[in-house]
Image (cartoon, rainbow, N blue to C red; front, side, top):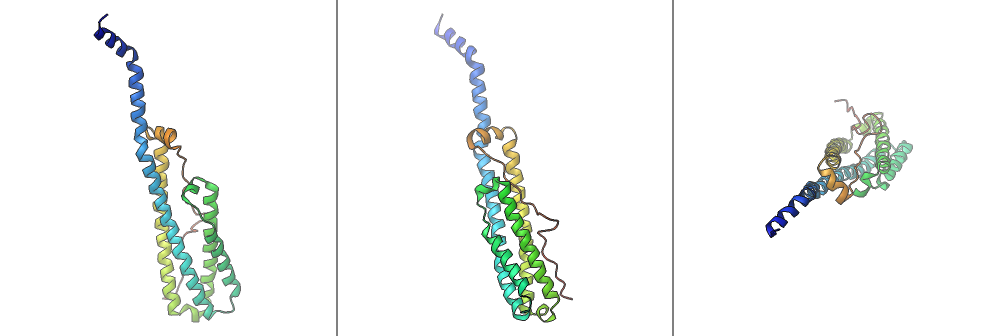
Length: 207
């Protein structure tokens, strides 16, 4: 048997296995770059969510200080807002925790509680005409409402990125690379724990 015949026989014998291996490698390669890229995009969007919540924490401090000056009798309300803010800021989530639904749920619940306390603070202002007409308060409330809108947009963008990432790691062919190379885990979307929990508190200034 000639060298050519031996080579041809070898190729015909092992061609299916060779082609299958090449196909598997090609398919898994589809997720090598796309999976971590989608993951980093989701993590970046989560950073935006945290940044907007931090902005709200800072504004709440100034808002409470302004209201205190004109409503000293409402100490219980101020204490509750301070406690809710303290708890919310104490619950931190790093990007590795985004695959843990229980940790994301703790963060969500803390934000909901803070939002409810803030609503009670607004109700206090509504009952106090002097504070209600305070220019500093009106300015801070306007900034706070703008921040609430930013939070809503940031959460929407984060959830869109999470949905894209979770879909990618579960669908063919990227699922091959996601499982075999990256050990990818689904991320947890952010959801309000109660209806309209992330809506900005509604304030009627009598305008």
